[in-house]
Amino acid sequence: MNKKTIWSIAFLFMFTILAACSNDDDGASDDNSEEAGDSNTEEQAEGGAEGGGEMPEMPEPDLEGVPDTVAEVNGEEISKNEFETAYTSQFQQMAMQMQMTGEELDQDQLKQQVAESLIGQELLVQEANNEGIEASEDEVNSTIDGLIEQNNFESREDLIAALEEQGTGEEEFMQQVESQVQLDTLINNESGDLEASEEEMQELYDQLVAQQEQQGQQSESGEEQSIPSFEEAQPNLEQQVINQKRAEVVQGLISELRENAEVSTNL
Image (cartoon, rainbow, N blue to C red; front, side, top):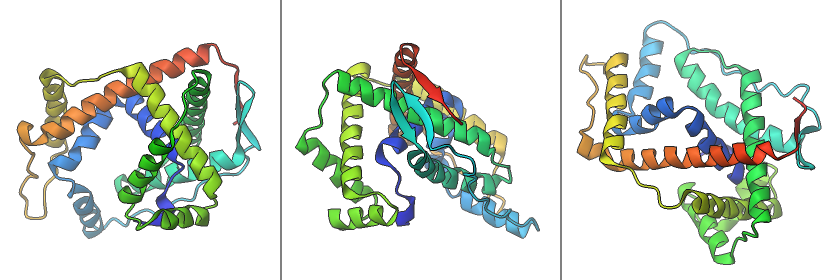
């Protein structure tokens, strides 16, 4: 994994969960498409090049005019540096997707999405602190071990070194991990035990099948991409349904907290 793709831990979680909530239908199909021919992306890229169309040039993030204080949430500032780190990471991912489809990335819209995600994150962190939720040493260590494994690092030292290359010091990183543990606890308390019914999984599966059929994506040999059976896709479908429900809980909590909060944005 390219070490430069490591994100701010808390921001990555919040942006993903909020994006899932605001784009339930798209997210359902996209997340599960990995189980139904994830090689499509590579083949689309090859097909586009062979078809005579050149891949559009990768754009650069537009950070001109970002204020020193992007937003304030109950007196707590979201700084320019915090915003730029989050925006650049999300921009890189979105730009790659847009390059594949040939669409143009609306950076103004993305900036607003990133700012809103950071505001939501700050509201949840404040609520966790208000409820006295703390991150234990074992929980922090477990989270870090998970990051080491997910990103294929050999040790904590390697992870810290990679983060420092991106300008995130060890102290800041530890604070982010503690905030992540607090957020996980807060959201778990709010959501309780979430389950996915067979009807919900079947509905999600039908959406995936319909999307694949509509796209009519074919391999180079002209054969249609195979779609896994419902039984094969069920573990992934179950997790996606739960993720969607969790996202709805998060969005509902943020909306509730924002009603009683003092929030100002300067973008």
